[in-house]
Image 1 (cartoon, one colour):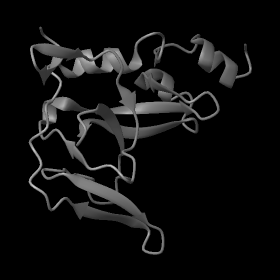
Image 2 (spheres, rainbow, N blue to C red):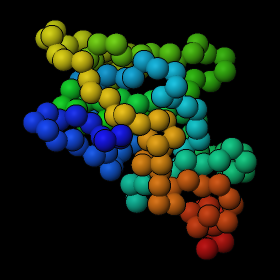
Image 3 (cartoon, rainbow, N blue to C red):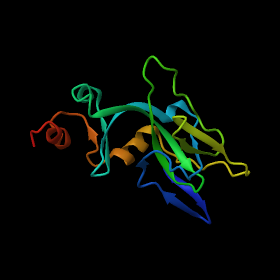
Image 4 (spheres, rainbow, N blue to C red):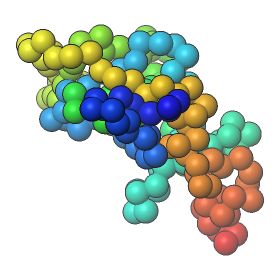
Length: 164
């Protein structure tokens, strides 16, 4: 079955929900190495509602203070949970943020040094089982149901602009 993740014993796990999130600091994760499974986007995050929207470029340029530019990357936890990781894009004057996890890693914030410490798992964990879906299909799962903003008339944008 296309789009399912193998779980063994003759069953498959359907990918119906795909969270957009930074990995938990206590989880070991891997990032898919393929450039075909990452894309730069503008995100709008409504903190109180705990909702994340992808914003089309023509709309994002109209609300620059509301969006942040990220690169969406496919990740998976050691427990097999797939997610889309919004990795911040660096300012143009800084080096590219090309970090890629080929090992199982855990990232913990180091506040005094203002960066993340990367811990590599010392156990021989199995390779991840990646979702059998295209980037477009993954984005549809994560941002379906009105979470793509492609017009200034979208209800979320109207509310932000005080027109709702």
